[in-house]
Length: 344
Ligand SMILES: [Zn+2]
Ligand SMILES: [Zn+2]
Image 1 (cartoon, rainbow, N blue to C red):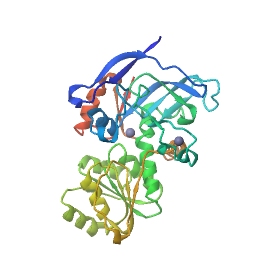
Image 2 (tube, helix red, strand yellow):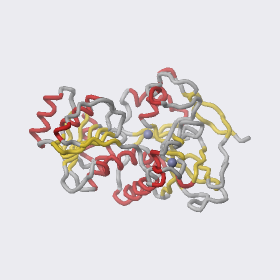
Image 3 (tube, rainbow, N blue to C red):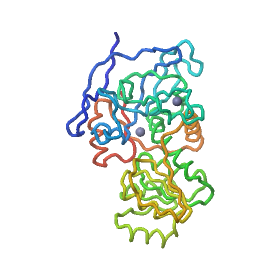
Image 4 (tube, rainbow, N blue to C red):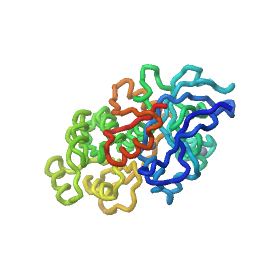
């Protein structure tokens, strides 16, 4: 059996203890006629891996099994196709989102919300993940990537990009709608651009001065420092901009969600694109709170199209696959500006 290099997680532990171990495992083989085999060129390092690997999300069932090969923002070259494959040919570039496969039969799947499928398989929660050299996927759950897009540019689009895109869509953007984006990291920096493409006035919030200047450069109308002093913060937002029409939350902290809800006008919309718990909610203000999770294959195709047409900027730093533990430590210590990408 041919082997491949992989960074394996056998036990959840703090990233300081180097929980990922480099190992040789059996190279994936096409098992079903509708599958393609990708030779991975790049895999993004998502914040959710940090939580999964450290065991923060055990209570919500992540990771469901061990050992695993983490990683769910994958771009590679098709090196083999199953006999029923029609969408791809050998040599094509393709990408995979966190949704590796769904049943295609249930209500969610037939309504184009396959990412909500109860029997979905998640990329990186089995041996089929991105921190390695090869992966198989059913063709319907892979998306074509133009050869003009570099793999380290395209990989982050497959989780951060689609998450940003769908969160912005959920905020119902239109011309001069005032949308606040809370958190300008790997996901937020793309959301700023998607909202601006729709003509919305983006106001970005972050604790980091560096992120605020990135936000401005990418077209935010204003970028303001987020502070835990909620009253003082809301007062500053009110003074400068009045309240917001909508808010999108990417920063996984309850104080941020709570503040975002309060920074929106009565009747406004709040989109929560992260794990949020129990923010205060006042029914009489008629606000709408919406959750959002990645997106469909159709959404993914749209993301690729928009990024190509509008020249959306993706801020990345590349590292060799073997450096996965170091990258996760950097991510934990806020030393990654936006998105780190592993190159096998
Ligand atoms: Zn992700
Ligand atoms: Zn389904």
